[in-house]
Length: 325
Image 1 (tube, rainbow, N blue to C red):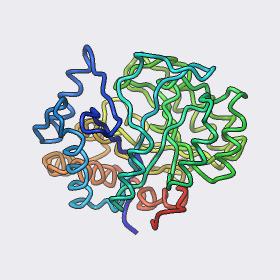
Image 2 (cartoon, rainbow, N blue to C red):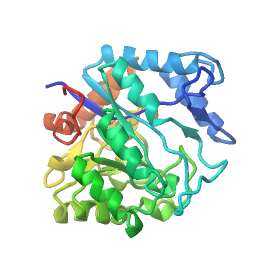
Image 3 (cartoon, rainbow, N blue to C red):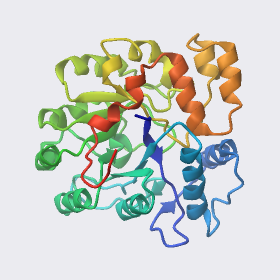
Image 4 (cartoon, rainbow, N blue to C red):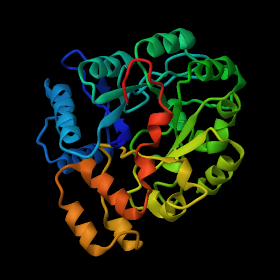
């Protein structure tokens, strides 16, 4: 079995009818420009062909890497707890229909939809997306304004458990997307869906993005002992702080709870793993020069010591009604 990258972002400006939008302001303009530069492409983020070029480039990376499939993520709008759309909040939006459509056209893509459980049509949209081939649901609770412990969402989590659709939920700090409620990134907020039987993947294992973030990693680690349906992913572990707990996640008892994800197009910089002694200088220099970011991330994480099962474990967690994986 070849690896599945379980954490890849789709972005688009919607100018060709994808339904996506981008709202990049302030310092995030510099971050977006840096991400495009590290891709090694000269796309105009405001161009009418940006959405198509981004998808085409991602397909090329998958085809020329060790990765067999890529879970592509939709991005929900931001709502309040009554289900009312919060205008002018959020940095980007990717509709569920867009990722579902991409996956139908490209078997390398596995679609993860995004649904705020406070929406009036949340249950109907959940069933529609499952029927349409969704393999997972992605939320950034701190950015989407979702308190996953709110019992008003109980039926939503129960329905997810009934369908077998797993939840990929951002945990820990966040710099790329505007944060609405910082405390919602605490992995303890995921206990209600876990109690309902949802398979939950805590994106980033509740690690930090900057020194002022709470370090919730020990909380995540403790929760895995209580919830056999809780996993974490190692996405963005090639960033300065995200990877500080690599050693714990490559050894038991946590190693068997970790799944693979890159967080593409977030930067992939092996220098931090080398500085911490997780990889040697020769490995760092060789793969840091590699132009394929997906291959670079995969090879760094192999060198860090993640067992081979880490890269294929997601196969047993995804909802696979319409996909052969």
